[in-house]
Length: 187
Image (cartoon, rainbow, N blue to C red; front, side, top):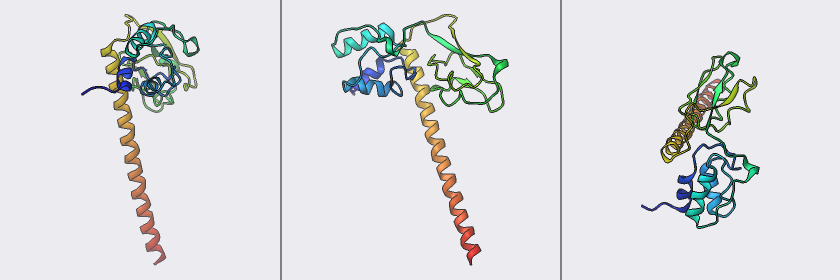
């Protein structure tokens, strides 16, 4: 089976889902590139290597990373200053790959091996206890790392969809019970 152009572009992106490109994730950015609505130089995590791969695929000229979208740097991971964490859980939803462990009013921690370095957890933290730090052994994004991150992202999306469906079903049952109670009360 041949991949669509969007899938081919998406496969070359680092799958950090960081939104630095101006899109909600790697797939929407790939879609925009394929439609000519976005340029190939908007992905800081992909950097020069990613731009070169996209240029080759699309048979266009390479160009430098557009600084409006950030700068290329070595991979970093989020780090929670645990003694400062208040357990608010505001960092959990924005993490696209579920790399943060924690519960309400409990200390949180980052699973460094799963963190894509997207930085999306930093802004929601009300006590500024999340920092980015250099990886011990920084590596460039490769196909295996990107595929792993994408799978974690898709797993989270699937879990959230299932939770939303389950919540809707519970609400539906509660409304049905309430309607029955009201019907009994009026009789």
